[in-house]
Amino acid sequence: MAKYNDSKCRLCRREGAKLFLKGDRCYTDKCAYDRRPYAPGHAGRARKKLSDYALQLREKQKVRRVYGVLERQFSNYFVKADMAKGVTGTNLLSFLERRLDNVIYRIGFANSRSQARQLVRHGIFTLNGRKVNIPSLLVKIGDQLSIPEKNRKIPVVAEAQEVIARRGCPAWLEVEASAFKATVKALPQRDDIQFPINESLIVELYSK
Image (cartoon, rainbow, N blue to C red; front, side, top):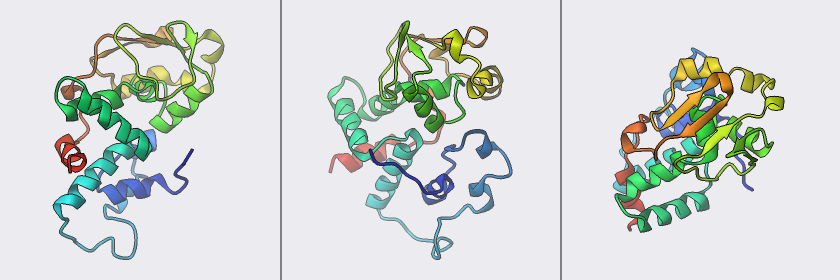
């Protein structure tokens, strides 16, 4: 499977926005995007007028990098979103939000989505009482996510309560930090996604 091994901060600078790929570090003065808020490379400071296609492409790349999915995965999500009832762009974001690795990040049991993926692959969590190791699994209403007793002493997991208190949790998820478990109360709505995303540009890109 393809993996990005370069500096994650370069991705934020390329997209011209904080993607919060390094967790809490992005909130500190060590954030590379705050110190150099322009694209990487020798021509990074130059102002360029982007075409409509370039704007659509950059928006798609930004969302894909935020959620950490590959090009083919993202394309498959769009096909599913287009076939589902409702607004295609909203459906797309809902599918991405329902990914297990994203839910782990949202409830504060990991510092970033990439860290959440690693923890899921190591079988740290259980879903409805069964161990899971597939980061792309989509949760549904009523699903219960928990951390078994034997895994609660892992340093990253042990910080869960502090992270949840600092970052907060979306309304469609209910967290019991002291019990190391969470429940999916509803499907994510567009208002639950506060990150600045213009999904209509992505729909326009794939509709060509």
